Image 1 (cartoon, helix red, strand yellow):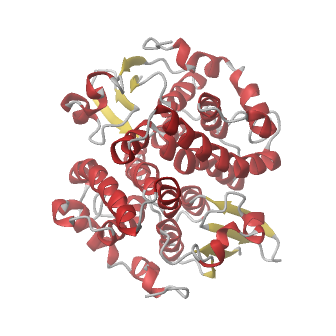
Image 2 (cartoon, chains in turn orange, red):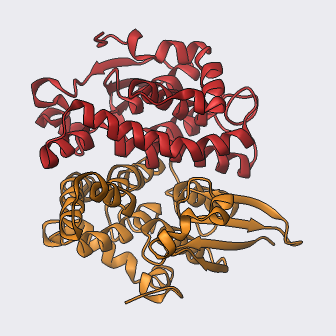
Length: 222
Length: 222
């Protein structure tokens, strides 16, 4: 049986996605915290860049029975798809190709259209280039999320049941729940997005989602 | 047999990825150009937002024999995975789970770590918020690509053969080729990245890659 080590950060929404999926599939894992702010960002250390040359979290290290490394995987979506392929039950996709495509569409709206533009790296670049302070960075993130949530809300309004894609939890919920948390953190008025709010609340009640929240991680800071 | 309509823009690298995959799998499609600059951005029109509420390209419309819409799909990665699932031959993934994960890792480095931060939307936001001109926006894009290509180059150095993942073309090449084009456009010194340059050149010789370049699209502007 393979074993898993997740290098991540409690507040990183991409690490959070992987925590949810591991828990949902009943896979135990060891957590190795990578503090994105301390020591000039521990993700930039030579040791971490050996593991992940991009210097990003999360990285999942998969080992076999003998402790030999099977894979060192970065990029949350690549990790989620890998876990889905290697541990298909319980699954995080609908049974039909169009349903899976719609699920991935929702995942990618969060993963590629929203999150990358409001993450820590970009905010630091704004500060370096334009002298933005914390408030200006939060405002940048808030406006970006808000604008894209308008379209995401419309899509989820069509596909939702109790969760984002009908009445079963999918990878769409895995992506949306942490992004809704970030939205609140940056001051987005979530009452404008009733569907996103509802499906996010519903999924958050699942034990795997409950266990994955930042406040329950070993490296949490209040 | 399904038919395909691709709503995209000649210079959009995400539209370009879908053009490559359609061609690689021998699927004919109709092109509907969406001009991202004209008319305040045609992707922001009400008509287009009916199709894709996020107002982004590409959108692939899939119709059945009777012309009924099977799916309207946005997000290039969701579209690529859908095409792979519904038309697995010729395939764009390695045969093993770890190989597929490494392929998706390379795809997502381009799709979620690099491209979203150097795209037109972000540049426009920089201009709106900080008054950047075209040269400053190009410099932002150049630095972002350059920094992330350092890590991507190291990964591809390990996985490459003739192409990014060994000696068969995969989705990694589909993502890398348009991003290397953008890198050159924004002034990245590609001689620093010999592996990315080599695999990109090799894949570009494939007829599906040749047919998908911006200069061969009906909406091309020199």
